[in-house]
Image (cartoon, rainbow, N blue to C red; front, side, top):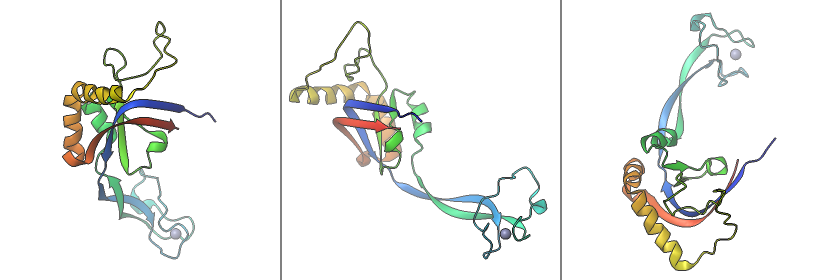
Amino acid sequence: MSLDYSIHIGPYLECQVAKVQVQKEKRTCVNVECKNHGKAFYSQYAPIEKIFCELCGNKIETISTPIEMDSVHTGELRDKIKEKLIPLGGNFNSKEEHYWVSNQREDSHISYDPKTPDEEKIITELVFNKMSAMMSQFEEYFEKEIKIIKKEYGEDRVKIKFGVLCNVS
Ligand SMILES: [Zn+2]
C-alpha cells in the first residue's frame, strides 16, 4: 500500500455543501427475517423474476431507499470550469465542506509549487501582506470560475481563504 501526501499552501475556496435526499434503487431479498435483507444483489442483467435469494428462496425485488448526497457533484463542476480549479479528495472527502485549489502552475502567482526545474525554490517566506495580495490575485484570476462555483453551492456558502491544506489519500 502506498500513501499519497500533498500539501497546498496558498489561497483556496471553502465551499459549504448542502445535502439532498435522493431515492436509490437496489435489488434485495424482501424477507425481513433473512440475512440477505437489505443487501444489494448485483445480477442486473438477469430478468428480476428469475432471481431468488440463495438463503431463504424468497423473490428478489427492487426497493427504493433514501440516501443522503451532496447537492454539488464535484466531478461535473470540475469539468464545467475546465479543471482550472480542482477539488481536494483523499481525507477531504468526508468533510462537510468541499475545498477547491488552483490547478494552474505558471504565470498565475498563486502557487508556491517549487517543481519547475530552473527554479529551485526550497524556501519561500510568507509575509502577511503577501497573503492578502495573493488572495486578491486568486480572486481576480479565477473570477469566472468562482462565479460558476458560487452558482452551484450558493453565493454565501463559498469563502476565499488562505492556509495550509494537508491531503492524505
Ligand atoms: Zn433471503
